[in-house]
Structure formats: C-alpha cells, structure tokens
Length: 151
Image (cartoon, rainbow, N blue to C red; front, side, top):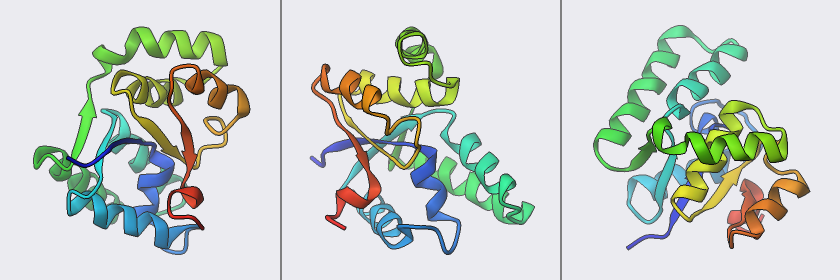
C-alpha cells in the first residue's frame, strides 16, 4: 500500500496553473497519485480552496469548473481522500488557538493529524517553524514540495 500524504491547496493548485514554481514536481506528484504510487488525502474544503486560488490569479471560469470537477472525480474514484470537516473541527480548533492559523490551514493540518500522515505544502503559514515543531511532537513532518523529490 502506498504511503499516505496529506496535500494542501498550495500544492494541488499547481496541478492546474501553468508556470508555477515547482510545477514539474507538482505534476509528477499528480501522476503518482493517479497511478496509486502515492495515497493522498486532504480536508474536504480542498476543491473549493483550489477554485479560490485559481480565481485569485484570473484563471478562466470554465477551467476553474473543470479543475473542481477533476478533483471531485479523483475523490469519487478513490485517488484523493477528502476528510469531512466534522471529523477535523476539534483538532483544527486546537491548531488555530495554539498556532494562530487561518481556518483552512488549520483544517489542512488537522487532516494530516487525523490521518497520521505527513503534510505536503507550499503555504508559508504551514511552513513556519512553530507549525513544524507542533507536527514533529506528533511524529509528523511538514514537507515543502521542493523536498519531496530532492530538488
């Protein structure tokens, strides 16, 4: 069975946005998720967060809808486990209070904690040392995309 890793929207948005930093690594990750070499999970808000990221950079609305449909289909087919918010609330609340995180970031962190998986992110809030220490105490790691393939 493939190792489970929790993904943040900062990673998944790179699957759809051309010209992003570490685009090649992000696309390689997507291929590995779709070939079941990597087992991926995320907060159930991930598809909406990716849509918002694409809206912010002026991505065409039709392409945003396609991205949302792709992520929904990946979930339905079992390539991407979307963890329900109800399962994450208490852990997310603790992360918000202790680490001063935004709700979406706290839910992402909670998904990793609930699944006992490392977190792959490019989000500067989640890459802070205090977040890494918090996860380290739980035996988990916060990994930037550039490190997953030894860039």
